[in-house]
Length: 209
Image 1 (spheres, one colour):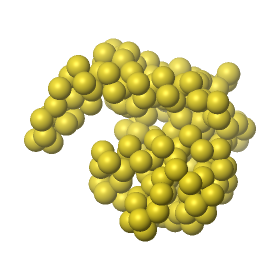
Image 2 (cartoon, one colour):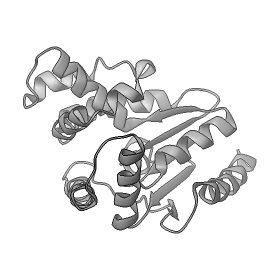
Image 3 (cartoon, helix red, strand yellow):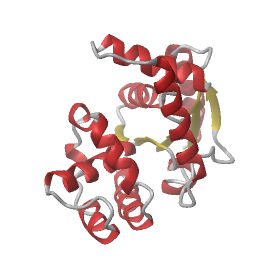
């Protein structure tokens, strides 16, 4: 069983993915961390972020079992990841690794921006998790403030909007819902409600397996 979960930043797909994986005892992969891991490896080795051949080689060596969310969530790593994520050769290398991960038993949950459309287009269950830009910016703001760091809502809003435009406008694997994805809009929905809705859909799919 492969569960593909896509959506823009701060829509809640990561939290939902982890809840689903834990509930069903499936393996979970935040595919965004694979790009961050490749970017960190380039930075640590003092390698350029604008050389596609070098970035592809490093991306092909990323070990998916050793992704440390705390370390990889740093802002500068995210900025570096966004630069290499637009490189087709890097995407090919990481998509191949992500597909290999998706075949793990007894099942997998992969979340990202092109899982249902590119990485696992044949996944029996696909979700597209979204929320308004305002809500997502507010969530990101609250998260940063709760962590004790200073934050400006307007700057975060602009950053979220810019990231959406970049993700949705890129030529290679743009962010968009798969034709057969179930839409979950969390603007007015709690993560618990989204989890219940997702579970109903997954349970129905598992009965067909």
